[in-house]
Image (cartoon, rainbow, N blue to C red; front, side, top):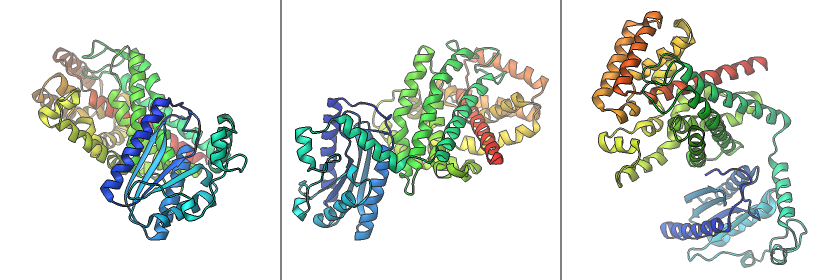
Length: 486
């Protein structure tokens, strides 16, 4: 979980986190039967996540893993936790506890960030190995050099003073150069512009069968074009935040594991949904987009982080490869979600469709690397931009391609598999008749819209995929423009 910087923590949250930590420690010792290394960061006060905390945490993990490699010790298990109550890493290591503690003390005492690391070693009975067990002196205060436990007990220094010094150390270690900082600012501005473009250009595409557009609300009685504008304003900053989170995890010589990406952005997605419902009066306009585009934006941030200084992002030249890596990032987590669904009654529309038809919906699409995008929408858009009369026609061409091939759960939720099959057939026949989306095709789409409204059909999942396709297109154009200007 990747919390927001400078978010204060309540005492109850800290106590609950401490209980969870103790339980997890005991469980890992029981499961692996070997000593446990526990990394936390020394950050006093109610705010446990400061700017550059993620980078410091990843550096601590890297140092521990390098030290273990030097000892010839391979962790039997590893758990990483990112909460607003603090970042933690736990390594189960089949080794001699005193030797492990000696290596951890070397990290604490001999690297620039070591003073911010708190690395405990627990023996198989759960007791800590102390510095005194190895004849080492106790740790000193961050500010005055006296024994840390003495200053802590007497509260010799204020939280404000300690936090200021910790922030100084973090900033000194991780602050980007002015060029990197400016490039990052431009990069995230470009991502936000692309997000807004994708969301709004999709709804501006007209006429769309059964969907909200500039002409009408399609098969929806609770939303209109203005609803989507309000929702876009609410949602876009959170998708950018997910991209920033991915960027943070992907930085440095030793980026966080890819599997850490999805848990880090999931809570941001929850907040995005809350903001969307607040902006729309409870209407679900972009829930699917928050999930899908959030994953993709986070992956783009993760994989683009190393290339920021030179705007060298080869991953964006291979969109299918990027989407495949998205699948790898989410698959272990979403697989657990499906296992949990099988063990309880379904709650959401998507869970009910999974229980009834075995259709995995957008979760399955993400797990498989977004094949509807990789194999249909993105190639269709490349073709359409050079063959269709204008941008609106190209967008409609992509939408109809998606409608002809995607198992759209929006359609299934409102109807049944027979209706879904009918929509696919209608869309395929339309594309066979109309190689170009001209005046005659537009009239036919208007009639199709009226038919869909009568049948309460809305291919909203396909509309989301069109929006993501437009996001990719805008982002690529922006990056190419910047590359040419360098």
